[in-house]
Length: 326
Image 1 (spheres, rainbow, N blue to C red):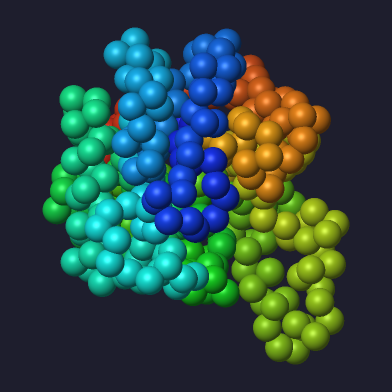
Image 2 (image 1 turned 45 degrees about the vertical axis):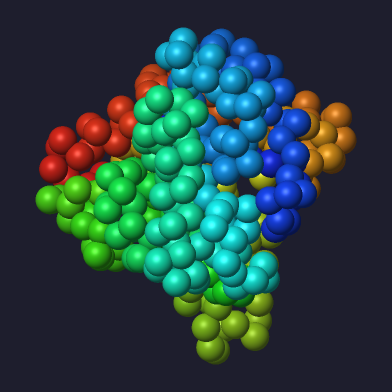
């Protein structure tokens, strides 16, 4: 099993806000984070939003790390603060995949061009803000020669937020053709590395099928799925130090190994490094818990023999193998 770490390097403001109102002071905390990564020999992939990439001081932080071979750089597209600004800012339009394809293309291209200019190399991977990713987005990435996406959240639907439904996806990485996100295509030229989300009460597939069944008639009125989730049996767990306890993170990693996952993908926001910027880290104690949870993930992977590799390296191995990761 290989460990990759993907960090959404984004502005301080949580939630949609116009570009002009963005600040990126949390990026000053990145050197603190890098010390943790260096202890465990981790080369993270930082996925930069437009305000971060366009800020000279923030870009300089990542440029130094990139030149030293201590990170990779990718794109994280928040449509509300990525030009051109043609759409109304509302909940539906915060999902990139809901915008017209031409506007999606213009935003992703502008972000790609800015990052290429700032770092003298194109971004290696992409994640859509608020997980707003779909078939048209994948086709645009293929056109722009960005072959690695990490926007899918397994076993999760964002339909209530007018976003995509990823509930049919597992956390296994897979290659695919850009026109068909639903099918693992060994000959595909694109790669999806989902965020690692799974169940800790048993087989990912069996737990998910049971949860789906309990959420349908005649069982849904009994709220059994919610009850079992509270017990931890049918609760989906995110491999993120922002969201989970160290004990649950270790249980998820153990189950991922049993499931034969070739890649586990840890994710969090750079803004959680600065107290008060995210709902996950509101106090200094919560920041300490966040960093302790991150260290737990990295230490477990190191001790279990899971190799930490950059996202692009893990992706290329799967693409060269000519098969998905199932």
